[in-house]
Length: 167
Image (cartoon, rainbow, N blue to C red; front, side):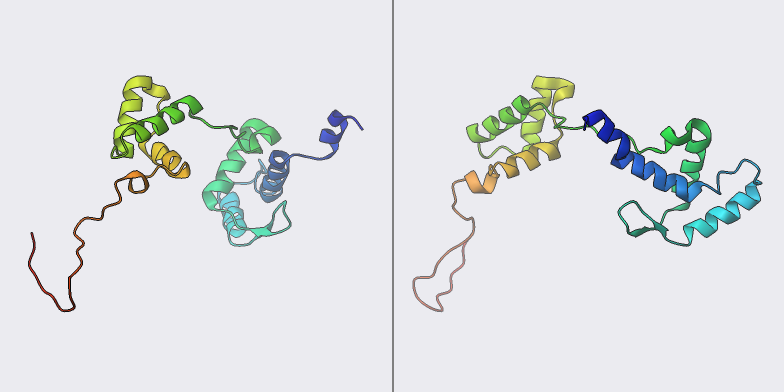
């Protein structure tokens, strides 16, 4: 069976979601309803659960249902489909590799400092501070893992119950 024919018979998740949204708003989107009638129907729709494409039940907010009705009136069925998601990483892997190199070069650098360096070098293409922190943590390049390992402020007594004052 050709792949094109198979895609025509089995709807993708966006089409299934659009069908679900249409089932929810089918009666609510009637052009002959007055605003008062539509408001009562939308409030009733918000108060109960609707079967979803996965076989479960789902509730919807008033703002979502109102948005779907507006989308239906403006663009029909295609407007009910969820937005297409972007695939793949948004940050250039070479820039993230440079973040790792900066951390290895000086382990005491913070994620914020590394993000600032990358922003100065790459401008708009540079990742956010949080993205840098997540990437470094995923690669095992946390500061405390790379640091000297000596804890600050710890001491051991030479004998039990030995008390002393320190800075």
